[in-house]
Length: 283
Image (tube, rainbow, N blue to C red; front, side, top):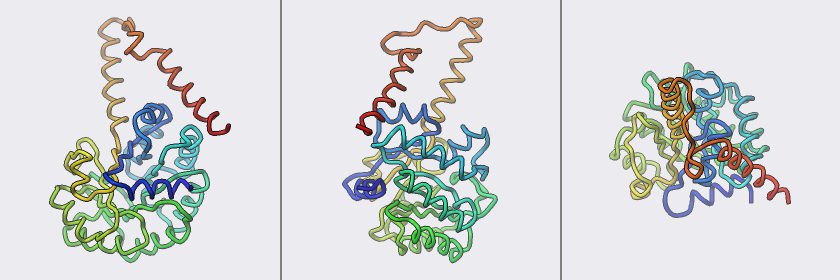
């Protein structure tokens, strides 16, 4: 079964499928031990690869190269990839989709923002005319083979949100995402206009959307939940804390608990597990 069809089958199953946002190979190595699905977040990738905010700096060859490394290390995991607006042009979007499917991505998210783009939970978002976005989306859908395609709208006006959600649900896209959705009531309203089309909900710490459990999302009829930044923000906090402590102790490293602490042995075991996983698949 193809990677796209495996993810499609998982989404069609009971409950809400969680996909954990990863931003580099090390965060993915840790996430892989907890969940069987990953989300390549544009926010996390822009931050980690470029040290820049998620406002359109990502170059598609960098994203494709990263996903290729992920698939090589984690052959059994679902990989959903944020491709922003398809890197502006519909032809480029199709080229990127072909490349991602060839290297083993499970799915992509294509948004309707126009440049300059913004994080889905930020102010100042602008969207393309719906007809223009639908042309791009239809070209991507005609290009993919089995890849899961999530159609995303960043509309902010209430009537436009519902109109676009219904329009996206009427296409052959596999899943619909309204990003930056602000309340449980709005999840219900989007669920109603989307009909039977699977829904995706994006949770990001400090973002616009409510914090909901997988059980709560399942009760609301949400099929997929992406957690864009838990690894990135946890790393930020832990690194800042560790370096603050290093300064406080005049540069003396802390004792490392051989069972629970993270030191060179723990890190090496984690990375050796990736090597073992690749060898098992080859065998």
